[in-house]
Image 1: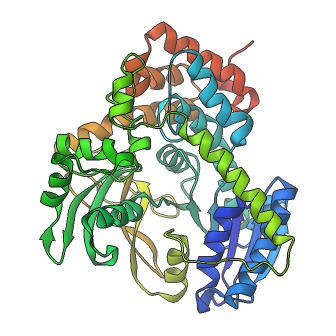
Image 2: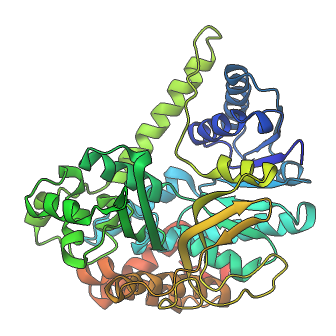
Image 3: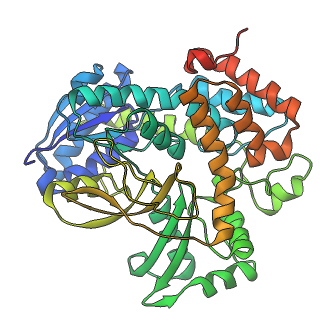
Length: 450
């Protein structure tokens, strides 16, 4: 694989694509890669094409770059497919996921992984990912699919059901990102931290967290007990004191995966734990502004384009599979893995989680691809907490696979945050309202008639 063929699906996510391109093209072995950029938005695609060429120039790489609005053309013969789509976009879909629940008194922070917003995002995203995978089965059946799209667990689970022949790994930066944050809190170099982490995406926990063989949990518990947690991270430090382990995803994410922190009749909780309601729409507005700023910079050929390493695993996986250099990354895969070709794997990766769920575990990567690590049992309180989220994921995926709309309501009624705030009549009415508003973004058999 002297000239790897790498397809970016959803390449209009220009800032994210820029980071991944910088990572990939900075490796000498990947500097001549065949880059294919696909998006349905021609304007954004054009900007990303300019970015790709400027990144290559900045790092001294010489790739070929193809920009196309024809998906199969981008995928044809690809070795790696990097997926970063957002079905429905910020407007109308994300705005809908926040505005309609707010009318029912249900507030959210991120709404891309769980909760009623995560359910809706899964319903509109999994079918599109499955359609992409069917294209891959035709034109690049041996490619590795690197999925960055949320809701991660629902997406990987749905793809395992609908397109098991395509090798897929879900990638997130929460494990390595949180490790760096904790190292900063402890005043230690991040590269000196050793850890073992496992669970489900956005709710994995550090089973070990050490520095030069010394357990760091007593120091983290001391920070929590003395009230010295960073104000933006109070939720996670609180959970550390309650369950004994630190969770990977941010406090704003985690606050809506449980029934404890967001309550409309308890504004004191919002203040005490510094929960940023409606955080994701604010981020989207800032990301749009960042895209506009980047487009403006590209119009000035004299303006330098900064390229610096990101914390994403994508380039490391590609480099390891091309060169054979072994690495360990954290990936999202099925708990009972299905091997490429559809054969069943052997045994569960996390033994006290269900066979059919998506887990996040360390994975060895080399020329043989992604090889997940078997963890065994995790602490029972962590498995129980994860199960409350897995229930929602399972029912959302089942609604899509079986085409049964009633499972969407079941997912919502079992969601920890939604069920803590709304009664059953409200949950049914909210779900109806969201399904109507999303319209054709939702598979036809799951839609609600006007």
